[in-house]
Length: 338
Image 1 (cartoon, helix red, strand yellow):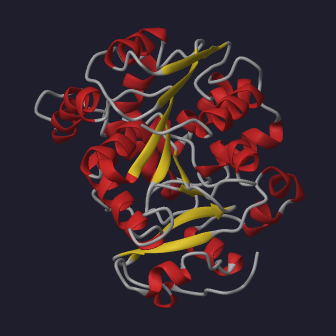
Image 2 (cartoon, rainbow, N blue to C red):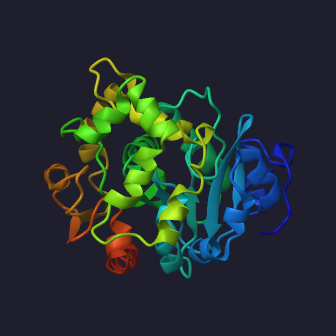
């Protein structure tokens, strides 16, 4: 990676006119790996670099730094990951689209190569606010094409992305949905409920890393290679660096009085009406034990005009059916706008 930026003082504040100009500058990899506690040897390993051949970039969120990728040129595509993944999940989609699209892919705070402060108020509302700040800085309204972009969401990226889209509908061109939900309907698997329990959940998620390790083995039809599994786990190498994983689990909106549940309910109620005119492509892994085909049924009912593709794939559907999905998304992004 190119040694350009070395610390938070080098970054423009959100809304700074210099933000767009500096948005595509890269970060000093050695400095950043040390700051976030991820082994530099892992980031430099040839096996990892062959899978993730991208330049790291940072955006300032107050006193914190938000890691993201900015690859290619053309009509922008923003891709939002879930839990316990990170921008690594979208690597093949980026490679498949960057010859004709500007691919913008953040790591949520607490995830991937972003900072992971231990006492940050991680919740759905704040993740949406972080997304708004980042996009205002790197894709301002005056940029081509009018600050508008296509949005791809997976897992927690669904509520975060749709939360943004409902607040900024004029900025979103098209929607691509991958195994996620913005609805309060549906059931939660027992193995995820266990990870939310006091004390036991922390032991499983943060001390033993069973949630991320299990996800790397139980979310595909075809087993992931050792190098791909290692790529998913690379940023979650310590108890400290797994704070975001546990925070996302705790924020799953089960409790009736949960602020995130109230927000999710508003997304599910409003999106089918306010975003109905947006072209939508749904790509679904039918072997997902978390977001089962029943969730796809809710999407079909809520967005009857959406184009739908079903695949023999698990929750990490881009791993099982990436070639087909990349082709389908590429063709969809060529389609007309209303």
